[in-house]
Each structure stands twice: as structure tokens, then as C-alpha cells.
Image: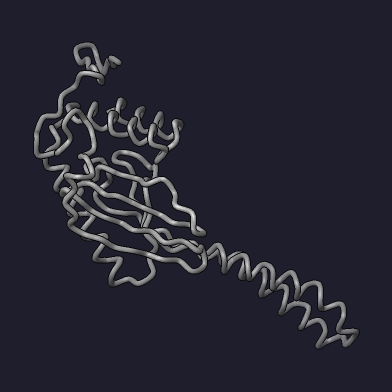
Amino acid sequence: MTVALGQTDIIDLDSWDVPSRDLNRPDRAIPPRSAWQIECRFRQTSVRARSSTLFSRFNRHYLSIQTHRRKKELPEKVIDLTFVEPQPREIRDFYYKLWFAAACLITVPAAIYSLVPTSLWWLVPPFGVAMVLAAVALRRRRHCFEFLALNSEVALFSVDAADQARVAALIESVCTGIAMGQRQLPEGKGKVPLAVSEMRRLSADGVITKEQYEVIKRNWFAL
């Protein structure tokens, strides 16, 4: 596959060589499992989602993510942290609008009832809807840190923000791995084929979709 970046810049993505052995990516491949040197492990469980995720950073700038959900093991994700944004994006989504709607469905009918006493049965429907909205908001609330693919808005993986002290240690370890990998990248357009090659691997492994891969690829070619 050959890509033209300009009138004089032509990159062959299928024959581009890695510039440094320090990247530990011979032939653009993930190191074999027998050669993994684990440097950090962190397990995160969620009772609400009935899931358990094990994060393992290995060989300086690689991350393995193994998830069990409802006793089913999901495909393992292996990510080269070299091509991840240096800092995560914090997501706080507590569905305040749903909570506000639930509060209104409780307080407004109650206020009307206090002014115009009538049968309590007509309060049941709004109270029931309020309980449903509150349950949905509680179940769908989200506070996490998302790690994005380098030079994109595509999330490669996320870490739940619960247990902040241990999560902060994991994030620090991941960011250290990102910095280690990115120090070995060439300057300018020389990093484009490496990044596109890694994103193509993640797409083939199902970590990102083909559509997300195309978006990321366009971002890199636009540099």
C-alpha cells in the first residue's frame, strides 16, 4: 500500500521499517507472550456491570487488557501505548437531566396534592415514572478516564474512576509507557506510517472499527 502525502512525500506502508529497536516491534508485531516482561498489573471489578478487567503493562510501552463479563471472557486487547494520547480524557456523565425530571415528577404532583387534596392513586403513575428514571440514571452513570488514539478522538480503552488512589497509580504507569514509546518516534511525517500501521492492526484485531480506523488514518494523512 503506497500513500502520497505531498508532491515529494511518498510512503509505502507495507515496507516501512521501524526506526529503532527500542520500540520492541520487529516487523511491526507485538512481542510474543513468552517474551512479555510484566511491569504493572491492575484488576478492576464492577458489580454493577458484572465485569472484571485486568490491565497489564509489559515491555515498557505495551498494554494488555483482559475482560470477563458475566463469566464470559472477551477477546484480549493488546495496545502499543506509543500511539495513545499522552493524557487521558476524564468523562463525568451522571445524567443530571434524568434526576431533575425524576425530582419534578415527585415534587410537582406532591405540591398539587397538598393544595388540592384528592385520591392518592393519581400520584402513583408520576411516582412510578420517577423511580424508573432514577434507576436508569443510576445504572447509566459514568465516571471514567478514556485513553484516545494518538491524533484522534477515538477511545481505545477506558478505566473506571472508582478507587481513585489505585486508578491514579495505573494512569501514571500507562502515561509512563506512552512517554517511553513516543520518545522513540521519528519527527514529522516519519511517524505517520508507523501510526497508521498500528491502527490498522487494532482494526484487524477488533479493538477499533474499520470506520474509526479510516477516521484516524485521515487525521494522520492531513498532517
